[in-house]
Length: 130
Ligand SMILES: [Cu+2]
Image 1 (cartoon, rainbow, N blue to C red):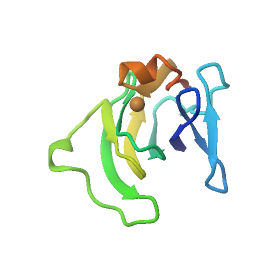
Image 2: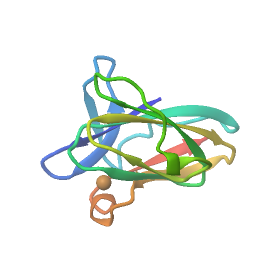
Image 3: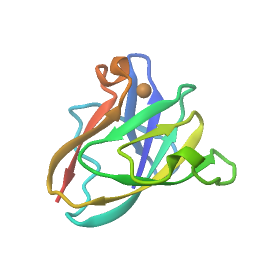
Image 4: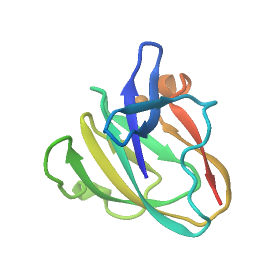
């Protein structure tokens, strides 16, 4: 599952990555694109094409930070202070951040940037477990 973050004229948006690596910008009301099975473990790749760091929060799930990879660069391990289970991760500019989550609770939830001005301007997406 590949997500990404891209700047747009109107707002910073979340979305998905097209097969050719380009952006597929999505708004709050766009159809759900993240739909893990209940009980599934998935690695989510979040690529940030903006020049801001975004603290991305995935509701109702705990995850581990696996690694980070600058676009076109090599992976590096999580920061020392990122060990253990988390529900929010810093996604740095021009990098892919990978997290591993077990989606154990079926239902409709959201994932979003935790900067208020961003989440209030469509930098929030629904996702469904099960
Ligand atoms: Cu943000």
